[in-house]
Length: 320
Image (tube, rainbow, N blue to C red; front, side, top):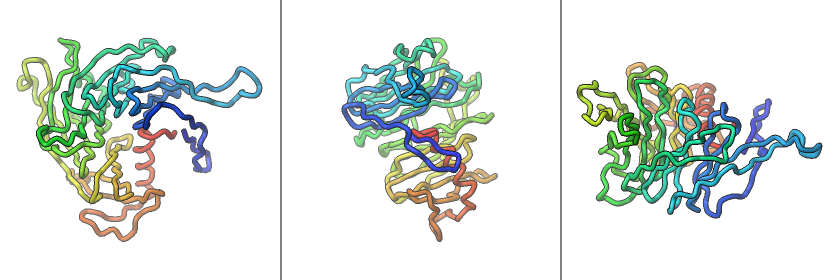
């Protein structure tokens, strides 16, 4: 875990060995729940961690350390992603695993992070690699979670599925599948929704893809109460010329950052015509790439781009 000092430098304030296999992901809970992290691993578990500031004696006073509050052991295969739900839903956590099951847990008492109850199990029928909650807090939108699969089987066409909570059945059910995404998916991210009537979803696969999901009118939706969507792909970029591993939005959902095997982070933004373009490229050390002449790429003033990148990546890495 890294803290940023007032002069802009990053310092490692905590590191610890945990899990008995590779740690695939870490994610922050919303700060209103305290300093809380979740991790997931090849060892088939997910764990919830809380930062404690030592007060017991003079030696520990003011020092912080991380305490494991719970271990979630329901999966029988590698847990490949873990994400906290939007804060308006309370303290909830979703995991997905290689056996194709998404599990949603809830902490009924936010003051006691050792107690988590399994609320939902969603069987996706294909190996899951990543999940993303729809962050919309509008009452018009039911809780929604997108699931990506890295299954290499050509028999399984849609590698992105979207599940919506049904108030009638009190269960999650599949609302949509993105039939055009047939390559293995490494990451997926709903954009923050600031008053939009539709949703934006970014997908990291062999390239970067951005979709819009516009809810159809109620009379056009399915009889089961699930929302149906008009789905369009609004951008597709292969500028990384390699596998894309992560996609992450800034806090307003206007800039998308993507990282790939080319060792670069690329920033994408739409203009007023809703045409998406690359507005900046950063190397792994944060320095801009000069003289970029790829399609649609131009060097933006990277002052604002760096800020956007920092905002977009802070939410998905163990930094604060």
